[in-house]
Image 1 (cartoon, one colour):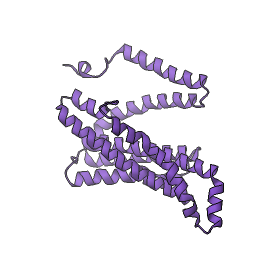
Image 2: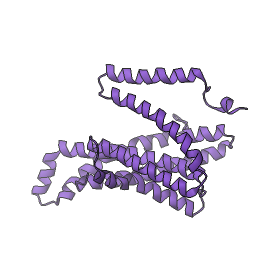
Image 3: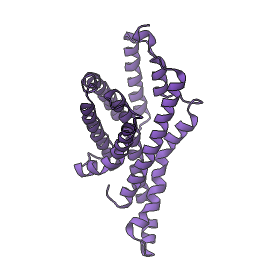
Image 4: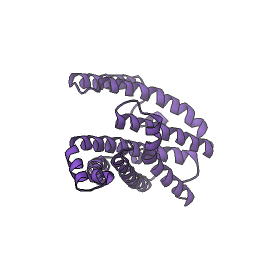
Length: 251
């Protein structure tokens, strides 16, 4: 079969029209519902087009060399930290914030990928490193953004509780820690629910991609299990570090 026949959707003019219509629908619904994210949705679509085109061009080159692949992952991690910084700070983040948020966003992914390569579970090749790191970075970025925003929002809303704890002799970090952890933990719910419902409600992309690529269904299931468990671990670390940073007023 041709690659077009093997893909999930038919690649052609019809797909281009569908993407354009869906993009307009996303922007229109956001505008009509007054969510405040109509412009964000339009910018996100435009950036996705440009960035995926660039990715297709760049990855064909860097994937051939493991060090080039590692450098590419580094660029991805900085972009992810910048995105989380803009969400947590709700403004254009300073480089200090980006540098701090690199820890929860990228460090867990770097650690997991490095260990997996060292023990031989993940091949030391760009074809394996870049997609794995990309999936884990995306999960950690989303968790950091949500955990950071929720923690700061709760600290502002429950300022009285913090002040009461301080009056009882708690240290500032201790007075804020429980609130930050409780609020930040809500960022873990989407990943936990997706893992619990996999195969019943959702059929993830890694599984579908491997099956379409000709891999045995059992291998695809094992690979998907690895990805989802790794995401849970990376997200848990990202949430814990982000909540601690919020409690110490570092972000």
